[in-house]
Amino acid sequence: MSKPKVLITRRWPESVELKLQQRYQVTLNPDDHPFSAEELKQALQQYDAVCPSVCDSLPAEVLNVADKRCKILGNFGVGYNHIDIAAARQQGLTVSNTPGVLTESTADIAMTLLLMSARRGAEGDRLVRSGGWSGWCPTQMMSSDVTGATLGLIGFGRIAQAMAGKAHHGFGMKILYVKPSPADPATVADLQAIRCNNVEQMLPQCDYVSLHCPGGAETRHLINAERLRLMKPSAHLINTARGDVVDSQALIDALRERRIAGAGLDVYENEPKLHPGFLSLENATLLPHLGSATIATRTAMGEKVLANLEAFFAGRELPDRVV
Ligand code: DGY
Image (cartoon, rainbow, N blue to C red; front, side, top):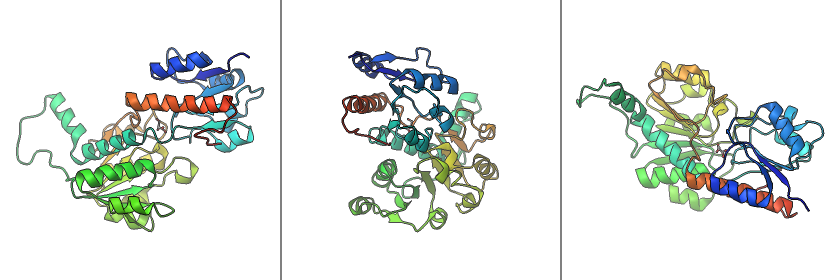
């Protein structure tokens, strides 16, 4: 029997590309260009498995392409809001993702952004590089304390809990969270975390707010102008979840008018074409979607996709089935 045909839409760490090539007839993307909708449609027509990532938009219009050969989308990433899941289900496509393996690295980036925003790290780096630093002085670039401050988490899944662990045990932070259902009692006890009734109740109490909910229609612009007004003027907003959870224009206005102190962002609406208003704001720390970008994590993500493909083609239940 011939090997299944598999396409990966972007470059992966070499070790997992090699393993994939040993098991399947694989097409790589040698120049690592982002696929157009047309290329994605063709991929669905030509391959048994397509392995997309967050940079591939797969709306119904693409997934519904005629004469599909594809049976499984092995997503390289935990978030799948770039895939129209209802359309995938309706088209009989299986979808898998990569939960668990990127928890710590993404929480590390959230903590990095929190520290950079609080202590004005990116701004300080720019000052030194520009040659504009005139030397130490007692009032230069004063910033906000992290140790002992209050961190509010919107969403309290794996990544939020990992960040809470770093913040509470590493920095003595008080942890508040909002989640539809109560969290595991042992985790709550370990973090001395307090569940708030809703976002409105939590925001005014926080020195730092970190977003950890899934993207998609339900959470689009969850952080909007009204909710930004509930934050303390000294507070910082951290987003490592999905860009569309925050209304960009409302955040830019709040940062420009200093209604909040800062924002640390790893994700953006319409990324990589983020709102140009962010670029001139000294109090916005901007990273290029680095959450899971360590060699070990990206390799583990590839291994997860491999495990899901293997189960699928062997007719076994998938370890990480979304649909
Ligand atoms: C994910 O896994 O969803 C990240 O955002 C991309 O690595």
